[in-house]
Image (tube, rainbow, N blue to C red; front, side, top):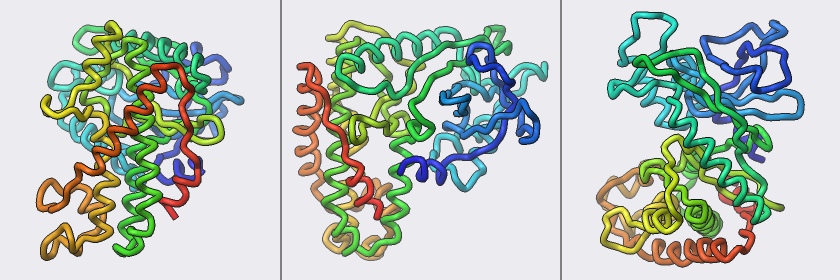
Length: 366
């Protein structure tokens, strides 16, 4: 299922890599433009966000992050009708407005001095530390590793007189990189085609699916706490979560750890359980997955929650509304708090997590 969905949201192309079977010998991989498919050194790729790519070598799938110091791949993805991640479009605008170094061999930089499309050594080390710690936790719970860290490598490009790096990962499959954000956008597009009555008929499946997402947010919070890993609060957005296989179904997994710090377990737990406003008792991560089903309820009966012309708007417009909704969304939040706690506590106690049945995805998207 997700291989077909990935084809709808990812840009494909070819990049010259070489014929070696070993990823360490392939690096660094720098995207400077499309390669001729007839070139024996050309390899087919899929984009992963704007600054990473995925390719197959034999029976192994690799994701290489940090291949786009010049903004070339980001531009190709951002200008494609397949792209569903707004952050890539924003990054493209940043790249266009960034200052070029005088040396053409050097890459773009953000105005705050950080490199564009690559990372510094400490960011690569953060990823290595986080993914290796999570790999051990996954193994203890019988979870297939959704993103296995392999290595990081010097790109040969300096930004602000500092060496830059890229990181490489091994994936179970190409579709294992499908992002929750991309799923959200595909489902929103499907609901845009539905009448309120048709959305109402889907609401049970949508509620159950996103309840499982919240449950897995609890699982991931437990894993991060147990391993003493603390990502930044801003990095919990759905584009940093993948939908990966788990047993006979799926789970969602927090990936991308360039900013994740190593702390003690208690510090990680307390920080991860904080709410957005610091007042209520709803962990911030719950909000990332509760908004979609709560807005689906509004779209199923818009005349009860929206005034005037707003009651005739499509689902995607309702999804992004910041005001004007006369609905008590706290009921969804209260249910999700309990589901989150179930995933959190069962994982802390060492119980393997429950998978998300594929039928829930199919029913919601049908």
